[in-house]
Structure formats: structure tokens, C-alpha cells
Image (cartoon, rainbow, N blue to C red; front, side):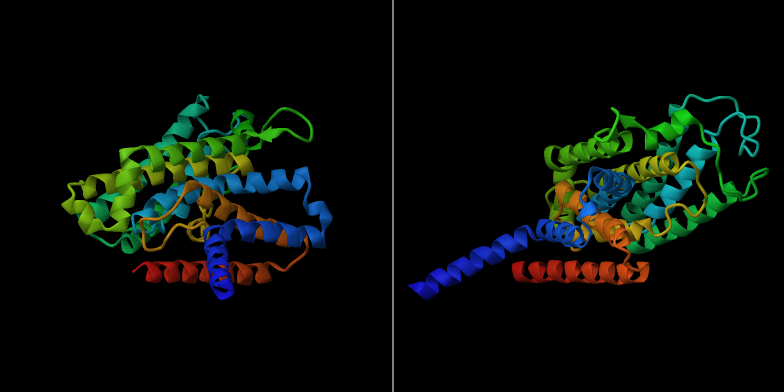
Length: 342
């Protein structure tokens, strides 16, 4: 009887640890860094972590759409860079000496932002068409888009009279989006954090309350069964890649606004951080599994690793090693669960 109770208790503990592993890791990270340096657990540190997480979270949410369909997207970072450059190039102060477009009239701030998001959407649309209509594997399709988008961005960035100079002198009404706050003092809330929370809510609604979300999980779970059940897989894959591209476009705009400038190298390797955050957050590499809260916690974990380990003076090279180990462990854990289900 005692042995049976011990076995049942052990199984319940394993089930709890498996289900909430990502949250346990997050809590342990915060506790460990705070013990080493108690000032880490302050309002200013929390605000900095949330600000740094905001654009990365939006990128990761876009990547999550693709991963849940059992695909991958290597073009996310370069789309972020392209849209950052496009929005920044059109929203410079009129008195800035090195304007990208010297004769461009004053534009309403929303116009370049919408244009950049549409450009991101079109890049995602290309990915979706190549994957769904030409049957090119997502890895290869998005790899090709990654290279092409970087080339396009570099050509745009090198146009006269800019000649590949970093874009600066951005208008205050634009930079306020990425650096402004609601309220005053220690407990003010950054606009960019509220935008990320709003985007996460919209994505959660899509994932859990819409036909698109339902079909997305079905495609990732078993694409052949989805086709047999009457789902127009090609159409919904195009929708999914396009939405992901629009999210990358929004992230590019926010990144330019937050940093006050842009270059053609913005977004480099962001897709790998986003994929890693998704995997650590419970999005399965085999498709069909993933939640918005999990993705957000995965992003927070990697931001805490970057910010917290820098905060306590750990070498950036050790940070890379730690991140790599976490990624491998998360994927191994995911594959073990997948094998157990089979």
C-alpha cells in the first residue's frame, strides 16, 4: 500500500513538474539572480526586462504561428530589419541634416508604420505561397526569403544620399511609441509593453477562439488528416504566414522607435531567439502544440538570462553557453514527450 502511494505521489509530482516546468525555471532564475544581487528585484529592473521583452515577444508570437503548423521561419529577423529601416527612413525630423529622403514632406506618423507592417505582411505572404503552392519545405522557403529580404534591405539602405549610413534623427512622435510611458514616476507603464500585451491578447484570441486557430493546430497535428477532413490547408497556411509577417513588421517598427534609429543589420539572428523562446515556452517542434502564455514566459526567460546575467557581471560568452544548454534541454524534453505519446 505504501509503495503504491509513493508511486502515485511520484507520478503526480512528475506530471506537475512536466506541466509547469517552464514556470518553475523562471521562478528559479529570478530567485538565483536575486540572491546573488538583491537589487535585481526592483521596479526599474522589472521595467527594463519588460521593455526588452516587448519586441522579442511580438516576433516570437509570429514564429509560434509557424511552429504550431510544424513549420519554421528563418526570415523573421530580416523582415524585422527591413521594416525598421522603412519606417525609420520616412520618420526623420525635418531639420535633421542627413535625412534619408531630403525632400519627403511631413507624413502622419501612422502612415509609414502601416506601410512597414504591410511590407512585413507581404514578405510573410511570399513565404506562405512558396510553402503551400510550390510545396517547398518551410526551412528552405524561409531561408531563401531571409537572404532575399536582407539583400533588398541592403539595396534600399544603400540608396543615395544615405549610402549605408545609420538612420537617425527620428521624430519625437515616433520615438515616443517605443520610449514613452503612461503615468509618471516609478510605477509608470511603457507604451511598448502595453502594445506587446495587446498583441499577445489578440494572438491568444486567434489561437483559442477562431476557426483559423483551430485549423492551425489541426494542420500541425496531422496535415494529412486535416486535408482529409476538408480543411483548405494551402489557404490557411498562406493566412498564417501572412499574419506572422505582419507581426514581424510591427516588431520592426517598435524596434526602430525604441532604439531611435535603424540599420540594415537590425533583426540579425532575432529569429533564432524567437524560435528558442517558443520551444522553451512549450511550443512543440513537431507541431500542433503551443500556447500564448507559454511563449510569453519563454521570452521572459531568455530576457532574464540576458539581462540578469549581465546585471551580475557574467561574461556574454557564458550567457551563450547557458542559452544553448537551455535550448537543447527544452527540445530534448519536448521530443521525449512526443515519443511517449506515440
